[in-house]
Each structure stands twice: as C-alpha cells, then as structure tokens.
Image 1 (cartoon, rainbow, N blue to C red):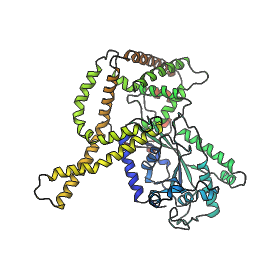
Image 2: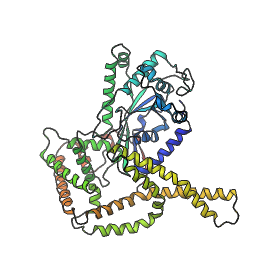
Image 3: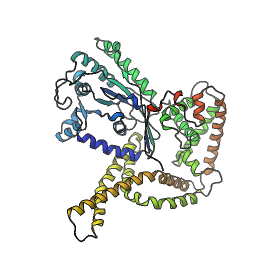
Image 4: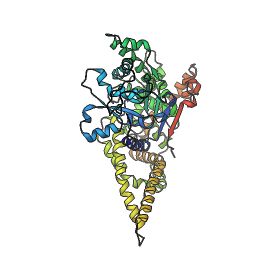
Length: 506
C-alpha cells in the first residue's frame, strides 16, 4: 500500500508539533526494529493521538507505519482519498469473517510493510496496563494462517494491494515488536518521552498449528496475548496504585538534579523505585513512614501546582523568604532577550491554553489538545507574519517587481523560521523562570513553613532509607539511589542499542 504526499505532509507537521512540545524524546533499542519485512508494532496507549504521532515520527530506519481506520470513515470521497493517501487501512468491523476483516492488513503485511496497533483498545490514564484486547493476536495469527493457505496472493484492491494480485517478492512471517511510551509527565509542556522497543517476537510453529486447528483458535490467541502483555509490561512503568507513583515522582527529583536522571534508563529506574515503594507484606517500617511523609508532601505541592524540584530550586533554604524579589529580578534580566520570540508565539500559547480547557478531566487528552491547537494556531499566523515582514521590507523600495517580492518573501520566511528556532532554544529556561516566579507569588509567606517542614521530613526519611539500602546487595538499586547512571552491562544495554533524539535545553 503506497504512502502518498499526504502522509509526508501530516508526518512533517506532526513532527513539528511534538518537537516543540516535548523538550527531549529518547529512542531506546532502535536496533530491535527490523529494517525490512512485515512488522506489527504493539504500543501502549496512554496519550491519545500523541502516541501514534510519536511512533510514526520517531520510527527507526525510516520505516513508515500504517494504522487502522473504521471503514465508515471512507464513505466520503475526499476523506477517503486523504485517509488512503496517508496510509490508513480500512477495517470492516461488522464482518465476522476474520480473513475479510483483516484483508487490507494482510495485503500490507505481505508487501513487507508495518502497522501499529494498540492492544489496550482505548487511551486512558491509570498507573499500570489495565487491559489487553485480543485484536492484535487475531491479526498476527490470522496473517500466519492466511500466508500458509494463500501464499503471496493479494486481494487486488487498489487501496491496500496497489492493484496487485500477488506480492512481487518473497513473503516473510510477521514479527511483533512491542513499543513502550513512557512520558515523564504527560500533561506538562516541555516534559520528555522515552520510546523503548522490545526485541522482535516471532510466531512459533506450534502456536500457528494450534491456531489452524479447529476449536483451538482461542487457546492460541490467549497464549500469544499473554506473551504480548508480558513484553508490554516490561517496556512500561506499572504501579498498583497512584500513591506509589506520587512517592516515586518526588524521590526521583531528590536523586537527580534534573529530576529525571538518564532518560535512556528512565523507565527502568522508575520501575525499580516503584517496586521499592509498592505496598507489600513485610515492607520496611522506614519505607512505610517515608511513604506517609511523601504523600503529605505531594498533596501540599499539588495545592500550589508545584513539584519538589521546582520548590527546592525556588526555595532551597528555610531562610529564603525574599525569593519573590530575587525571581522577579532574574525574569526582568532574561525576558527582554526572549520577548520577540515570545511575542511571535503568542498565538501558539493562546491556542494551547484554549486546548488545556477542552477536556480538563481527561489527562490523556491534555497533550493532544495542547499540541493540536497550539500547532495550528501557530501555522495559521505564519503566512500573516511573512506577509507583514515582506511588506515592511518592500516599503522602502520605489520599484517593486516579482523578483524583489520573491526575495523579500524568502527573507521573511527565513526570519520567521529563525525566530521559531531561537524560541525553542530559549523557552526552557524562561518557562522555568516563569514557573518559579509564579510559585513565589502563590506562596509569598503563606504555606512556606508547612512545605519546608514536609520537605525536611521526606529528605531525612530518604537519607535513612538510603543508609538501610546500602547494606543490601542490590547493586542496581544502590547505583540508582546514589544518582549514578546505571552501568550498561548491568541492564544489558549496549550504547549501539540506544538512539537519542534530543532538543538542547539551554
């Protein structure tokens, strides 16, 4: 199924959006993605349309990814053209015949292409993987069955098989690669994302034989889905409750100066901490007491929309009672250099602000609304900025021809692009300064003592726990709590397996 120019256009615009919204996106184990052949990507779905956007724009080896779309969406000829040109596969959900249901998918896979599916079925906000549906297993095993029954035969449909009745080359069995998306804070502007790929999962012949045996299909489906669920949990952060995650978020900001640590190990480190602080039988009294203090501290921080890292950087000592004046002075020094890029981006800020209020109770939709409305608000004003700058450049010229118009328009577009690049380079430090100033204004003198006392209790409890853990033989955990980057050999990660895609934070 060919990808048309619509796919590249959407992918380019989407890439602009995620690169502007997130400060860093790190890709782990890109070598686990096959460079050729049919692949099904099984991805967790915790952030609405942002999930497929990141999967598509950050896919290793330049592999392009298809997605499913309900067949009813293809009824309108214009929408149909856009969806097909972008690489979407029509799925006839009302059909009880799985071979017909997945016909377009089988065509795409026989042509050696990739599709991404979300086994959870819907996007949600929970501290762990809550459900795994069997659609992916039916697809993978159904393809294996179809391949053995029909060989390289295609449907001949122009939409999915490019009008071919047979695959032009040898057809391989499909491989399943599980992709975990770990957001450091999925509702926060300029947060980060870790994308982690599992090693490819190949269907074994016994499970294929079982699936092709009448009456044994569902047993094979359950067996394969258990494998998928296990791998999906291995590349995502899973906690039994929110309280444990809230504790871990504070602890990670106590361990690392940036509050995150090495992003290529983010999911692994977070899961270690989750396992440490999870409620279980025989849990150390020190951890139980620290959990209680951390939860109290978390609620106090949440009441002023802050984090431990932000509060500690803003109020490092209990005698820092004049921080409002200090932070205001710092902002007045920084903001003049940031004012022009910021003014150009007011439409983006306004669009994102409107987006944040559309579905305030659904955190899985927050980033999506921020990015979409902010992105399109900004794109809408680009031609306006180019037009105004072009007019100002041509205002001093007595004779204006098409060459001068073209040169002026090109210069204007270059200026707009440069302003955007400068904005992205300066936004992190200025946004952080704004958050600190806002926190100082919120607190002033009220609530500071409570927060200082709560922080002190947590820091003392964490120090006590560290001393206890030092006596343990858990090398990984001790390296982690000391704030050191975990040795690659200890977690079986080679430098060649970690690909970084970052945007510099000034």
